[in-house]
Every structure is written in C-alpha cells, then in structure tokens.
Image 1 (cartoon, rainbow, N blue to C red):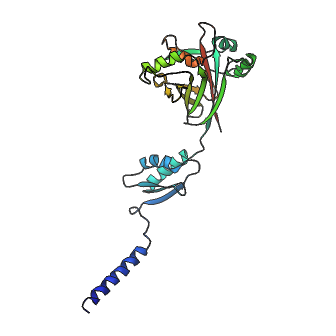
Image 2 (image 1 turned 30 degrees about the vertical axis):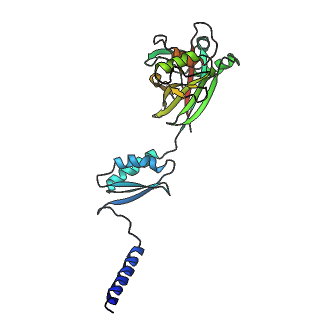
Length: 292
C-alpha cells in the first residue's frame, strides 16, 4: 500500500522523539574555566542572601537557590566564587536576640536614681537623655535597686520584650486611655480618620525596631503608635514622630516629649493614661542588651 512507508516513517520518528525526551537533561554548565560551588546554609534562609551574593559575581556569573536543601548554587570564575563564599560565611551566622526593657518613670523617679543624664533635643518632638557610663553605685548599675526602692506603685509600668536583631516588637504604655479627644483630634487633623469617627478608648505605645551596630552598639528605631479600641478602629503609627536612638549594648537611655516642640500627643502616649502631678512629665527609661 502506498501509504505504508509514510506511516512507518512517522512511527519511527515518534519512537525517536520519545527516546530523546526520556534522556535526562544535562545540568547547565558555566563557561570554560568556571567553577560550580554549592553553599548549604546553616542559620539563614537562602532566599535572603542570594541577592547580596549575585552582587559580587561577574557579569557572566549566576547564583540560584535550591529551596529543598536551603542552599545557594554559584557558577562563576574562581575568584568571584571565592568572594561569594567569603560573603556567605560572614553573613550566615546565628542572629542575636535583643532584649528591651521599658519602664515608665517620672522626673522624681529619675532624680531618685541620681543618674548623670546628658539631655538633647531631637526632631519629631523628642527629648533624649543619654546615660553615658555606668559606674558602681550609680548609673545603669543602680537602675535595678532604684526601681526596687520605688516599690510596686501601680503608676509604674515595666515591660520586657525580646526580639530578633532587625526585627520589630510593640511596647504598650497604656490601655483604654481616656484622652480620646487628644488622639482623635490628632488623627483627624493629619488625615488618618474622618471627624465623625467615634473613639471610646485608646491603646497607646511604641513600635521598636532594634539593630546591632558593630559589636557593642544597638540602634533603636522607635515609632509612637495609638490604636482606636472602638469596633473596627485602626492602629495609627505616628511616623512623623519616629526617632532613632543609639544605645551601648547593656546601656540605657531616657526618652521624653519635648516641651520645646509642644507635642501634646507624645506626652499623652508617654503617660499612657496615668495620673501624675500637675505639670510633671513622664519619661520612658529604655534599656537594651544583646543576648546569645
């Protein structure tokens, strides 16, 4: 039959194609002289570091992630591979945790501690008091005993949070704060809410974002926040009042609102609804230390 040879050729071609598809594809290779290096992560996630690794490779080099083994596969010239390996070994380390302790204090409390505080003003409505060097019997070493002498007053609030380096955590200064007119007025004036929004109570506090700087310094980024506790109420971060504070590892800093800036909202966030003497400001005593 005239069509039989043609059918036979089609069958043969189909068998050849099936055979070729069954052969496993050879792994991609780099150019002549390239080195293939596989780095298996120990502490970090491969996706976090593939970008920085790619930045040190040559124009023809490439880095890819093997998610199954949490590894980075690098193909490039030996000298570029060596740079990438050194970068990975320096960055693939166990991340430190940072413990942050925040205590609400008044000017009387600070005076009782007999701390040498170096005050400075910052933009955003902040007054920052640096505690320079801890010395025996005073300074940071006296913070614990000073707190004990003040007793268990309900007007004080001490909180401790532990967060990974470069992570974020929230510190609360007050719950169901009654100064709804102050916070609602601020939120409405800055376009966060409509003037008809009903605020029955407010939760106040700060978001903290700590980062290690070198071996013995901690950079704290602090952003005030307030949360409307009404049904469906939103959480508002007062980003224009955010500030960065550098603290010695294990050291402390005092944070207060600046009368120079006349920041009523910041003062009320610091107070957190607590009753203090007329004209007496409230401060946050912040201690930060790294943990293994």
